[in-house]
Image 1: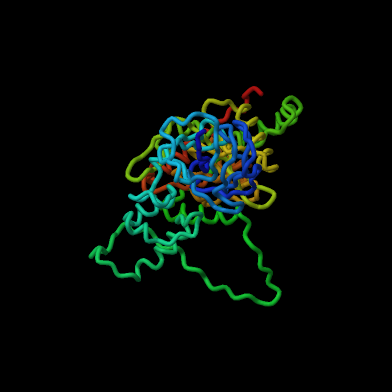
Image 2: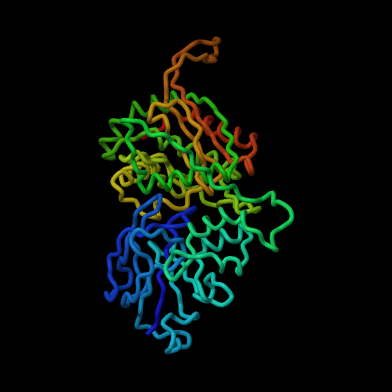
Length: 436
């Protein structure tokens, strides 16, 4: 017999925690490999988590409604496999520190195997600390001995994210002989103060749903992490409008679905990224990660009013029809809550079509850990001066604004401005004689 721990899986970049929605199995139930054990929710997707090992569900470590950090244990499964290390002592009720820990995941690409002896613990091994808590402790220069003094409200007195944040709020008021004599210039920003709101007669008080709370937190984090700058360009997309109007009925009859303007934007963005690969990066501390794949996320409005961002993988390797197929598929599944974690992971750049709401432009917020995002505005008819062989003429053209927000830590105005201009150039150069 061997005991293995199921860990909270990582379900997309920038996702640091998940909420346990429902346990599909109870303690004592037999579990087959790849059988769903529980449902987990993040700000991006609700999904079922399968077991990587067959066996018996020995213990549930996270209750329904608990918010659990990625990599933290959520259950213990007893398997029939022979333990690869020495058996635990008979007097111990917990697994040996050398027992194998396996991270449950929604697909193989997100699977992580971690040895329990490598899990964050204090020197005495008396209490488990999740990767998220350890990360916060490292950023705040909290030593292991100091971390050990923080009261925990989690299972087995474990320190949760809320515990360490509450401790940090009061930490500055406490005196310590180890306190530094100078103020650190790299200290993280303090949590935003709560604003007192007066309630008047007739006002309606509504609780934010889970997704809205998480979106709010992600947006505040992004503005805190990245200094946002936005560049604007107006593009003439007359050729695209005329071509789409000409083929849309035939396309729908042939393909069984409409062709929208979004695939044109994604195609142009993918081409521009190949020209300016330093837009396709992420920041990791003082390191820049240059992405090989061009994976374009697209913001989709849900019936609830929230937004979700599925990702078109390797967009530069698809033609217009291939992109259109993926756009329609992802948008349709997003609206009926059928997206998977893989559909939402791996994005390297994002586009948001604010024109679908009748807006001419916007200043979008970057999806971390990406460094740029583009908003495309409504296409409107405008009088414009057109250069011809016989002189300038005024004609009615279809125009739109492109708004490019980028992280000024690593993307300067020249690169950010040239990139959005190149996207506009590709849109304007669309060949009206392109075959369907």
